[in-house]
Image 1 (tube, rainbow, N blue to C red):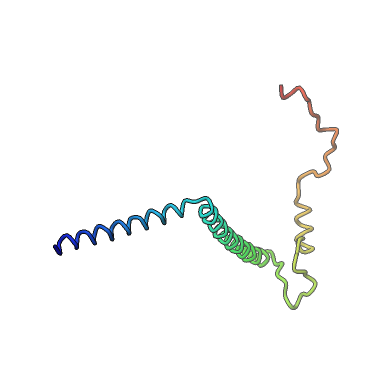
Image 2: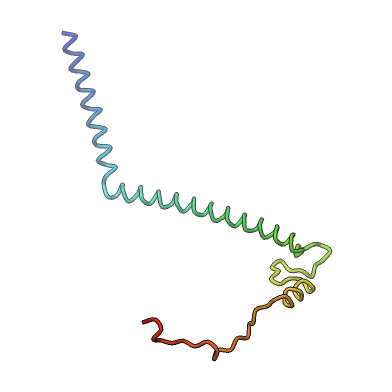
Length: 120
């Protein structure tokens, strides 16, 4: 008698457990639940993207500082003439760079011809 009661109870418990598991899975597959999961994943991806952008910005700032040090463009308390956003080389280096530039920046437009039939 106890044996039958034990197996009956075990079977009923297994049935309740299986029914609960199936219902949970079905609720996860409803359109509302899928939309909420997608929204959570999108928010998580946005946070990761923001963290990546901040890391890139920090790396850019570090590299810019290294390049400014290498070019001698670092802003010091001694030299307040330099601004935070230095875009040109200092005087002597800039003149040397311009003198050594071999490219012709004033090419005439008439020298460049375009034949429309060339592509065919």
